[in-house]
Image (tube, rainbow, N blue to C red; front, side, top):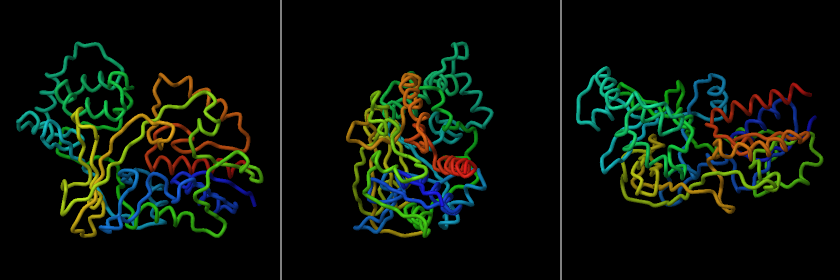
Amino acid sequence: MKKILIVGAGLTGATLARTLAESGCQIEVIDERNHVAGNCHTETDPETGIMIQKYGAHIFHTDQDQIWSFVNRFSVFMPFNHKVKTISNQKVYSLPINLMTINQFFSRAFSPAEAREYLTALTNQDLPYQDNFEGRLQKLIGTELYAAFFYGYTKKQWGRQPRELPASIFERLPIRFNYNDDYFNNRYQGLPELGYTDLVSKMLDLPNITVSLNTAYHQSLKHGFDHVFYSGPLDRYFGYSYGRLPYRTVDFQWFRAADDYQGCAVMNYSDELIPWTRIIEHKHFTYWHNFEDTVCCREIPKECGESDTPYYPVRFASNNDLLAQYQALASAERALTFVGRLGAFKYLDMDKAINEALEVARWYLQTL
């Protein structure tokens, strides 16, 4: 029986633990926090009874049958089609940009073909293509929609001018010429009825899995294990020997209110001068319950300092050399694999994190 140490009890670590344990390995999972489920941790607000997503909104969505089947082993998933609203210049619109957004913004009643033609006329197709976030969007939707919905929000989210950001950031933001206002296009969308922490706890519930919380990793812990899977920050593992990899983090400002604060789960704020990017109203995630009062959270992005929790890897061309240095150190490690959003230093949706963990587990089992 192989003895495995998994650092981190988030979705990546829990998927690895479950898969390897079911194959007969003895698993020890450690996490420096006092709970499992990582950044998708859920807990009950003591004053209202509302289940809150402690580190920001997480809606599970995927097109992969095997991933959907995997998570449904551990929780009943309630249907949830994520719909986002945004406030721009004191008016509310639907996101992603769709035919309703376009018609509202321009006070028109366009058909899909008319909307396409109108936006094409607004863009200067003779301008040279600029391979950055701002250039791609302005080429696609023109300067007015870009300024109203993307410029301020993106600048707040990343702390940089949008023209300095890669065009690839736009890949997650569809533009639709119909009235579909679903945020995601995936076949499967939902939320675990009892929360993500309950789901992850059930994933880790096997006799050959032990979990130790409030336990930080240090190098001496890897002795006595056949393999270590490390999902903590890549640069931290090597003592920041080349300097710190850049992350964005979030300040969460929690507040309670009576009744219903904003009428939806997620309200974005596109204007640059409003410091938060969005307000989350958590009771709208658990629509199958009724609550008189409400719990909300403003999210204010900022650069990640030494004492902050890293959330979004800033993986741009400007830091490729630094990342390559750490990746070279990682590849030289033996019996240790770096996994997950922090270990691989890349943004991962939840289904992608699970899928990559399943692939890593299969790879490891094939090496035995």
